[in-house]
Length: 135
Image (cartoon, rainbow, N blue to C red; front, side, top):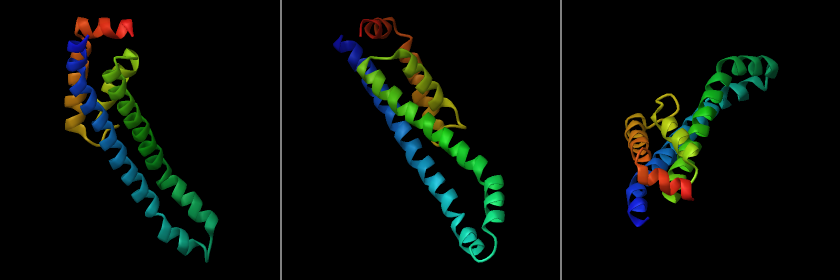
């Protein structure tokens, strides 16, 4: 069993770190998107807040929703890395590895493809599958 833990330790750690990096960059992108609305909102306080809300929802809402979906995928990637290291929840590990490999959900595209691919490769090992089935 120690050999299996050694085999999954590094890919699990890198997968979790990829998720953390995606959470950080996605969170910063979300903050920047919301901060860009502040000047227009302050200017609309003197005139018409309703028109600002309509304009902002049409232009910014899709971007904010997309960034939130990316944050959810990054959270899944972190969870998958931790679950891989614990040799639990193979379905979560597969889903998180695939989420890490999607460039639309991951700010760290090249790193995500490498760590997600490595995780999927490690998950195909019979000893890893057996260890996860026993847990």
